[in-house]
Image (cartoon, rainbow, N blue to C red; front, side, top):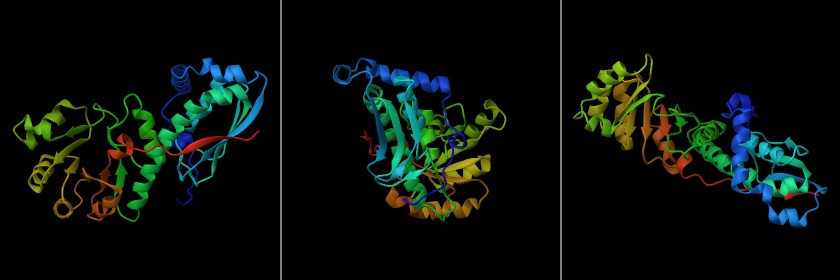
Length: 293
């Protein structure tokens, strides 16, 4: 993975305030009973000091480092952390992400929770970056979905941004997405669904309609949909829809999107490609904590 400019956490929009971050971290440490670490308390002297580094075992994109920093600082106010590769930055295999110094007990007892946060979110960022790289040079952008870990959505969508992706609607109140089951409840009447969404929704809310074929696309376009989602369409059908819509509204492709297929989807001319796999089945980035002294 090639290098990239280093964004700041503020630019990426880290989704947790300082109090929220501390609360989340403390809950995770309590779950692990990190303050009752019988092994470390029994074997490591209270005054022992050490240094360690979070190191990438494989190349990837970092996300969630503020949580790791908060973990170690929660374990001891005497811990010091130096960030080497911040959120949104690409690291190579063997690259140092951060250096931590302080009481050995704090480093040892906080290690697993800190790594769990960063490995999970960096995995999301890394997979997103692979999709973004795969469609580079086309007009398509990579979007996430609501297929997220319960109570972790804001962090996982933040990780998507770290990887260069774009967030779809944040929740069910953020935008209208009329899907096949909504249409089934209305006898397939796309115009009625869009009209009701306009009447019931707040002014200016985005109304998107999921379509299975070009007939539904025509109906959604005529009804005034803001975005049209092409659901599980073959490539030829997507190209036909792109030609029919001719740029009047954005077209989003969804369903069956893989790294092997995403470039071909992008080359149909769609504007957006949503990928549930960015968050629902992402492998963690392999990171470790190497003790230096």
